[in-house]
Image (cartoon, rainbow over all chains, first blue to last red; front, side, top):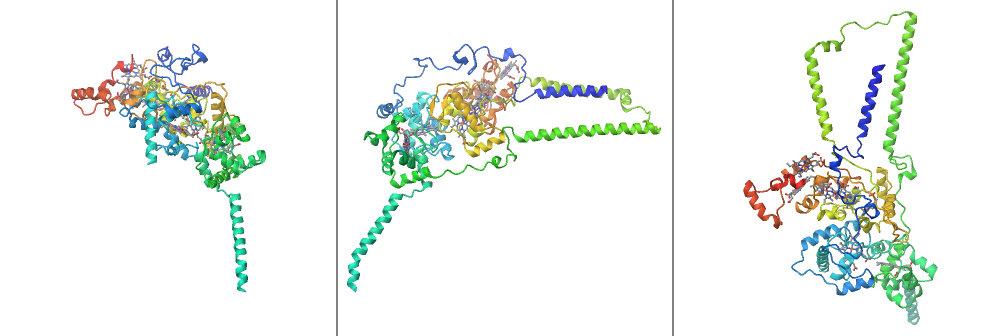
Length: 183
Length: 436
């Protein structure tokens, strides 16, 4: 009788150890103080910051280095102003269609289609509706940039995905797609 | 007699013409639209701002024509004018046009001068069509069918019930055997029959202990085996391969990156340019989820396999970002989503995404596995130092189109006498590159 008791005790202990090894929990570490960072990691929780998180917006009235101000407002008048007046700072030698295409295929192709005909994967699967083909709209470099920066109605803003220069590369690529579609 | 024919001819022509006019004008008035064509037109032109049953940028359009006729006494004429050029109608001082325009914060609706009368009646026929019934949910008809049940996947539930029942059965059997044995013995005692005792030879384990050679071999084997397991156990301490935490929002890469083919860098945008790959902020989600408030019915059915209600998960997203779905406005009350980090190198090792993704051009899947098939992300690679080093030994540096590398590549390949440099030969094994 005693042996059966011992065997059950050992089995129960083994079982508990094995069942501790769950996929939803992290493994043990040898020396956690060498593993866990002392400095702040991206997205870390920390009570040193507003809202207890490390990720913060730039302070009002400041511009990060390498950025410049975009002063046209997000209104219908702003859109018209950009359409009429805003021009690309890239000259023809700085336009790089290969990079423009790469960025466009990542960020815009999913809705607008890689050809700009409004037939992206999400449109074909009817998840998102009403994406226009570029040749049905009247576009200028300025209006495209404005739409990337602020979005338009149900299209969101894509300003935080790309740097200013990258945005203008995409603008150049969209103009090329529109010209190709209109051929 | 002939005269009669001629006399009647004019009136006959008149009559015929009148009938023709009537038939034509009735078709013009009735304007039988084609809902199928209307759907395509609606999806390309109007769906950016209008849904049938829900407010978006513009009002819900199900049965607009009937609604406007009943509530406002507006006819097809008005609708044609509105759709072809709403701002002209507003400027002309039309009361209802101005009312609805102000109600929607003076948002301008696009003008559609290119739409013909027929196009517009197709669209309106589509808005008036009765919605198709949602696909049969097998669980409504038969709540006990396979894959149904409140949240919990039934498979595992029924499995555990069956297992429990089996265990109970075995327990009962064992007890019955013991009881039978005991009663039999008691009978035997009562009848005075001696139960045969087993033979008193040397038991096998005693013979084994007496043979010293066998004992030695077995203990060495045992030691080696346990050493192997102990080593294995100590080596996996600190390695989180397969780690799969439960996230605050059940976000599925299978649906987004797999079924809908959204590029990894759409969301993990900073992998292109920085050390961290980053988790998308919620405004990125809202680029699509402003329009996708609930998943398609088929997707919702798929969710039952995993025991999640996908629509409820999207509501969690709306709650976190503070999106008021009925009014299509942000409320400003946000609460950050606390995603649980999975891949995490120790503080003393440095890893940079842009070096591997943009410079070396390595696919995400090489290191993270088939993420586009994962319902819940789990850690695919061990992320040990051996794993990094192995790949640096095996992978060639991508020098094409990289002006920085032309010179150093020439010199190094001369030094090593090879065509293609591996990352290791370029210095990918130096401790200081990853530890500092």
